[in-house]
Structures are given as C-alpha cells and as structure tokens.
Amino acid sequence: LVLLAVCVTIRLAIYLSPEIPSDFMIEKEASGWNLICNIMLAMLPIVGTTGFLMLCSDVLRGKLEDAAATDYLTSLPNRRSVTQRGVQMFDEAVQSQGSFAVAVVDIDIFKSLNDRYGHEAGDRALVHVANRLRAETRANDMVARSGGEEFTVLFSDMDSARARAAAERMRVSIEQGNFWWAEQLVPITVSTGVATRRHDDKCFEDILRRADQALYRAKSAGRNRIEVA
Image: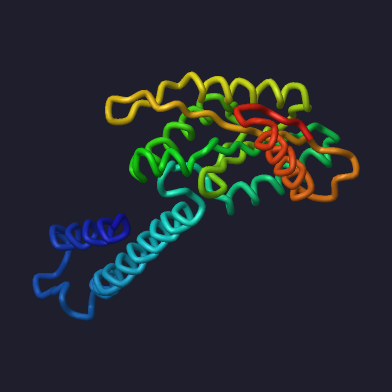
C-alpha cells in the first residue's frame, strides 16, 4: 500500500508538472511510471489476498493448536500438554541437577457426586477444583486436567517436603472451598499422590508412575489425604 501510494503520488506530480509537452499523455507507453503503476495495481490484489489468507491460516492454526492442548471444560492444559511440559521440566531438572515434583490429584467419590446431583453439577465441581488448584500454583508451575476427575500438577525446583506442603495447601483449599449447588453446600475433597525426581529416574514417566502409586495409597488409606512416594 505504501509503494502504491508513492507511485500514485509521483504519477500525480507528473500530471501537474508544467514542463511536460502539451501532447504528452501519461496513459500511453511513453511514461515509465504508467507501466510501474499498472504493475502495482495488478499485483496489489494478489499480494493482499495472499497475505490475508496466510494471516487467516496462521490464526486458525494457532486456535487449533490451543484447542488440541486445552481441556474444553476447565480451560486447563490437557494430558497431552502436561506430558510435553513434564518431559521438558524433567530434562531441565536433569541438566541443572535441580529438583522437580509431580502431584496427581483425584476428586474423592466423584461418581457419587454425579449420581446424586447430576452431571451438570459434576462439571461445575470440576471447574471449581480446577480454579482452586490454579490459585495455589506458582507462575512457573503447571496444573492440568489429565482426564476425568484427575488433575496433574508439575512443580519446578521443588523438593519432596515443599511439594507435600504445596499439595496440602491445595487439599485444604478444595476442602474449605464451599462448593454450592442447587442451594446446597456440597462437600468436595481430594486425594493426592506426590513424587519427586530421583537420580535413577530415566524419564518423566518414572516420576508420574510413582505419583500414581502414591495416589492409590492415599485412596486406600481413607481418601482426603496426601501420600508421598
């Protein structure tokens, strides 16, 4: 557009110039600016349309990537995203010889909540828990919905004691969160398994597997509690 404006301005200046012959016609081939302006006018729709389509394609691709990496209900990252981020954080911890922790959080007796209050209440409960977890994480941590009523939290640069303390804050926040549905206070609790990186861990899945096992122990021990691998 700028180039076109420059060309048209020069063409206008030629029209208004007092030094051109009386029989000069810029529309004829005698003027090189006429050729340049015609080329610009012909190329502008092509270049503009191509650029616009590329812009639309880029925006659409970005939206599709966000949709593929985000849980539609809670707007948290999904399992795919947490796996990718977990691998990245694990590699960073190995390179820096730092700490890295994973917490797997599961809503207790979620099926009973769905059966008693309905699936809409279950969806709102998931959003409620997601918001509580998000509020208790740091900017460099990550909380994701990994499936069903299960969430995964990645803690960067955090040892076992601090990870357990963070998980306890999340547990208390959810338990005391006062989730209301149909003018009823519905109690919600979570069980959590926590695992931290060990020197013999080969990959992120090793830590995640131990966190899952710790979660199973928390469920078996009575729920609404935290177990550390």
